[in-house]
Image (cartoon, rainbow, N blue to C red; front, side, top):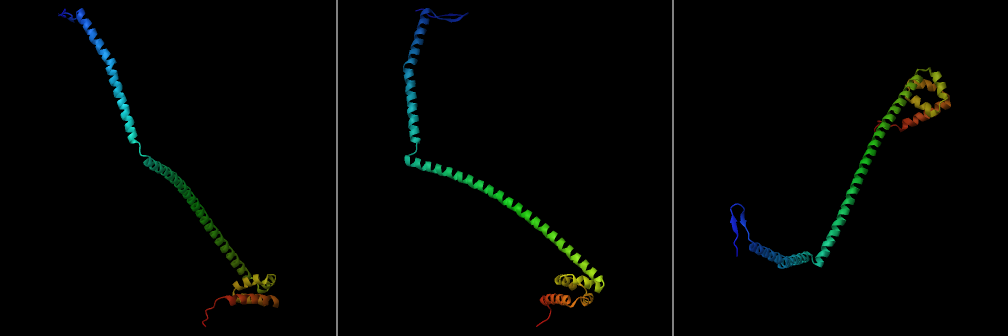
Length: 200
C-alpha cells in the first residue's frame, strides 16, 4: 500500500488507494444517515407527537369542570353586557338631569323676569292712580262731583278712599243722594273689613 507523500510545496497528497478508501468511508456514512439515522429521527418525531398529544389530553379539564367553566364564561359575558347597559343608561340619565337643570334655570330666570315686570307694572299703575287722585283733589269739588257721578260706585269709591278726607267730603256733598249713598256703603264695607287696634 502506498503511503501518502508529503510535499513541502503542495502539502499532503493522497494516493489512489487512499482516495478510494475515503470514498468508501463517505458512502458508508451516507448509508448510515439514510437508514438508521432516518429511523431514529422518525422515532424521535413520533415520540414527540405522542408526548404532545398526551400533554394536550392531560390539559383538557374534566367534563364537569368544563361545564362549570363554560357557565362562568357565559355569566361573565352577561355581566359585561349588563355593565354596558347600566353605563349607557347612566349616561342617558346624566344627560336628562342636565337638560332638566337647564330648563329649571330657564324657568327661574323667566319667573324672575315676570316678577320684575309685574312689579314695574304694579308700581306704574299705583303711580298713575296716585297722580289721578291728586288731579281730582285739585279740582273744584263741584266739578269733581259731576265727574264722579259718571263713574261706577266702586270706581268712585276707590278714588274717594285715597283722597284727603276734607276734599272727599266736599266732593260727596256735590253728589246726588243715590250716588253718595252707594259710594258710602262701599267705603263703609271696606272699612268694616279692615283690622282695628281696639282691644276687647
